[in-house]
Length: 126
Image 1 (cartoon, one colour):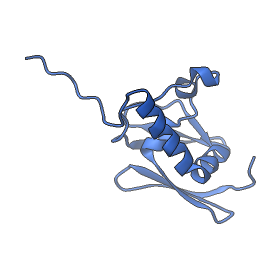
Image 2: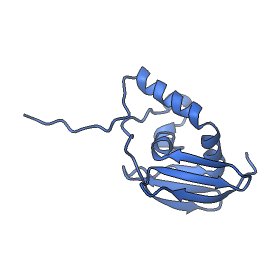
Image 3: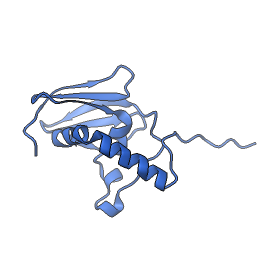
Image 4: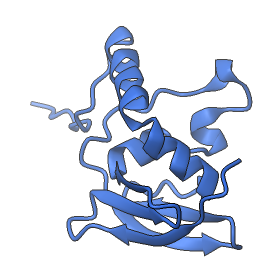
């Protein structure tokens, strides 16, 4: 548990990143894609490590909106309609501090499962 408190959450104009500024001076830029694929929701994380899902195809995902949840978290609603993750302040600072490691682990996981960051394209029937 961290003592840091967010001073500002700012979504970029293109809606592809979130900048979180904490009162301890830390400032983290988190991409919408990372936030989406690392969502703390049960849909993504499961109820145990074995149930955790690898979420492919989210390279172009955007933050549609955010809603405060009490004084401890924010719900991020993505343009793919995912909206069940509650991002606590502790989770956001952890994501920021470990962004590069988590991102590389995600890329490695996609690769090992033969998945892609590219959005799924509908198949065209001839």
